[in-house]
Structure formats: structure tokens, C-alpha cells
Length: 115
Length: 110
Image (tube, rainbow over all chains, first blue to last red; front, side, top):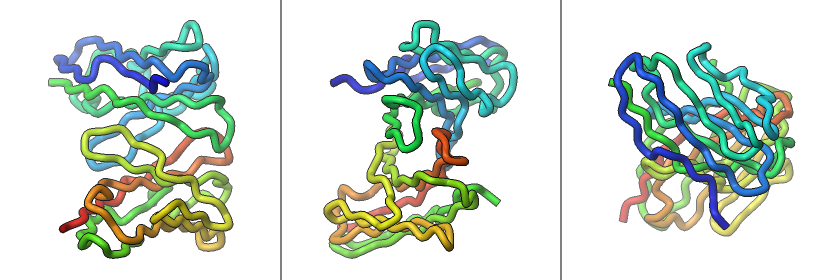
């Protein structure tokens, strides 16, 4: 079946602009995760959704970052007033449930470049 | 100190050789352990989970040492296609939140 999809694959924006990154999880997966990966680093946890609600947003770096999942499927990560330091690959993953040991399947990521 | 630490490499290994990576983690409450593989400019993909008793999947063997808080990955008869970055992943405090090492880069040479 279809895996996790993310759009756009690449996004170039200017400092101070607003961006939205979209994630479409595997059908039937209730848990959805956003990560950020900088060059030469492993992914860094941002936020976890169980259904429509954000069960844990402790990884969001500041209040410029916000994410929603209004119908419990597609999620959008929103970044306001982008800064050059926000440049990274934003990865989305989904799992069948949020329980321990549930395998997380990753999308191809959105490469965000803030000029 | 990082929660999950790996030797960044690169490990340059001739085709057919055996190579091993270690990874250490700091949170003794962690319960789930994984090795992911990531190709250049691609997303991470699960290679294997790591079980307390150790587990093997073809040419790949994973071991967990809870007392010393490290995980290992052994690759036998390495192939050119094994060239990638291998990420050690540990869950935090027995929950869903995954903590990732920075990865070990492996280059298999013909």
C-alpha cells in the first residue's frame, strides 16, 4: 500500500515568511510524528499526534512552530516568521498506534531552505 | 552528554568483510531499541528492532547490553549496497518518543 507522503519535497523561502508543510500518513495509522533533521544529525523529535490531538508537543522549539491534524489523518506543520536556522529536512512518520515498540514509518521529508 | 552516541565514521570497509558498530545510550529506563538505515538524501528506514536476547536477520545481527547500556550492529559479508548511514534509535522513558543518534556512515568499497 501507499506509504507516508509529504509535500512539498523542497521548499525555499525567505527569512520572515510563513510556510506550511503537509504530511499524509499511512491509511489507518492513528499516530503521527514530526521530526526535524539537520545535516549530519539524527532526526529530532518535534511533536506527536494520537488521532486529532497533539499528545506531546514538547519538541517544538518555540511558538513560531505549530502543527495540526484536524481530522486525524493529514497533518500540517506551520512555521511562522521563518529564520535561517529553521533550514532542515522535516520528516513525518506514522505508526499503527502510539504504543511502545510500534514501528514508525517515515515519509521522504520536506527539505526547507530559508534564505 | 548526548542521550544516544555513535561513532560518526566513516567506516571504509572492503566488500565481503564484517563490520560492527556500537551505540551507547544514557537513559536506563529505555525499553525499545532500533537500528535504522538512511541513504543519502532519503528518509530513515527501519533495519531491525533490537531485542534483549539479541536477534539476527540474514547478514545482520543486533545485540543489546542493558548493564553497559550499549547496542551493537554486526554486518557480515558486506555488500556495496550496504553503504549508508546507520542510525541507532532508543525510546525515551518507555514511551513513543524516539531519540536518535547522529548516525555512523558506512562505505563499502569494491
